[in-house]
Amino acid sequence: EAGVAQSPRYKIIEKRQSVAFWCNPISGHATLYWYQQILGQGPKLLIQFQNNGVVDDSQLPKDRFSAERLKGVDSTLKIQPAKLEDSAVYLCASSSGMGGNTIYFGEGSWLTVV
Amino acid sequence: QKEVEQNSGPLSVPEGAIASLNCTYSDRGSQSFFWYRQYSGKSPELIMFIYSNGDKEDGRFTAQLNKASQYVSLLIRDSQPSDSATYLCAVTRPSGNTPLVFGKGTRLSVIA
Image (cartoon, rainbow over all chains, first blue to last red):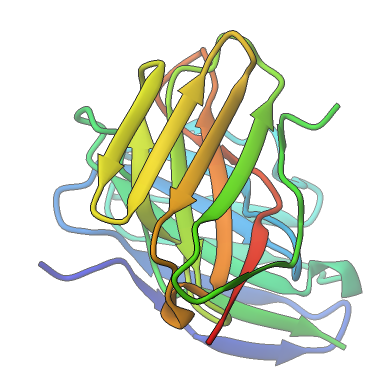
């Protein structure tokens, strides 16, 4: 079974520039998450999708971050304009939502804002 | 008060010893509890989850849950250098089974 795919793996941008990350969840997983993990901290949920609807985006900085999952499969997370404090790993994860509550993480997209 | 608290460590144990990792959570209604392992530069991977009070064993790993004390722990028996990693505790909010709320993690170092 293929895991959660993310791209790009690494990105360096200047502050005020924009960046987009892409995620393809495990096949059949209805629930998709984007987490932000700053160095030395645990992952923090940015947004949760159930199919193509948003379940929780309470911690998403909506003035600069946006995310979509138009067809209920792939998802894109965008940051515009980026700030230095956005330097982090952006982890996409998915779950089947069918008991067990097991969430599977992708390898992450490492962002450095300079 | 943070939702999920862990001692950041590092926790150093000799090879073959028992490593004990602890976690407390603030929301008494939390339902499910998870331990993830994260190697440096890698994504978190699930080790164990526990729902009920008591102990749950899986190989060298034992998760312990005490809901009255709002405390969950992970014991690693016969620790190996390959166990050296950051261990993340995560809980689910009472509003639903997901998403997970993570602690900052405890860095474990097993010394050969």
